[in-house]
Length: 332
Image (cartoon, rainbow, N blue to C red; front, side):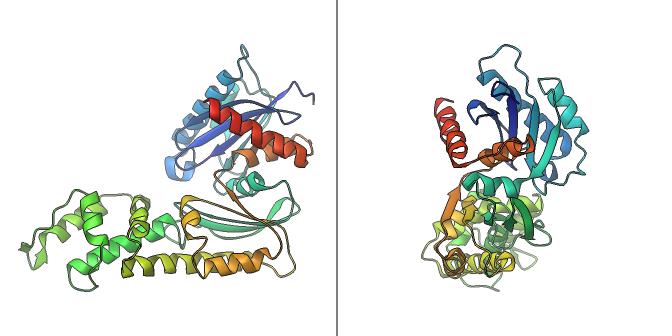
């Protein structure tokens, strides 16, 4: 492969899809963004449209007439190669893909966004929560990330659900008074009327209708309330519980004697990383290795795409990709 050939790397997140085009030397050529590209949360057809939209924007940003790419890699939740990728591959072929399409785990891409090393750990907490152990540049062991129904302990969903339950409990006397109640009711546009219907506060009935009218995962939108109510005891308990959940998830993948950097990311984790017991577990787990914070997995998707093309990514190339992407984002 020559440095003139273009490689497409896509980080298909739940809310944002990012596409980056690089050459074989790690020079960044074009960057584009679109809406959510996670087929689990968006559906495969909508996810494919987002991937195509982000890719089209990245191709246009290269400034080349009728640009093509020699291969592509999409980092998805789960990264299961059995996902039905024909629709996505066909759509990408129509706008410039001339080679194979590879699917990889978004968790591994997040790790590779923080470091080119082949050993270490990754812990992510945003809407969901998941941890992984990396060995020889592959996911060796994964804990949680099983979705709102089965896990995602300490995630935005987990916290948002705790907030909603605390509010419902205060309204009918099962729980203590909390600043979360007026915050949540205000966020939903609900009043604080004391009138009752069939023995229940009318505002609680309104809350029930509003929350059960949402998709469960949408409860994650309430998680910021637990951080905004900094001095509220109920909110403090929720934050501590979330930190404990994430500490347990990381402990499940940590292996004594297995070193390497710990890459962390996600809006929730950024706010909880200094909260015991999570802070203690991360410090103990990292030892002398660095703790690296990343914003997304697009750099890692590029690293994985280059490796799939049999191109070694050293520290210099990793830095070139990272700085190049930052410059493209600045210009966008």
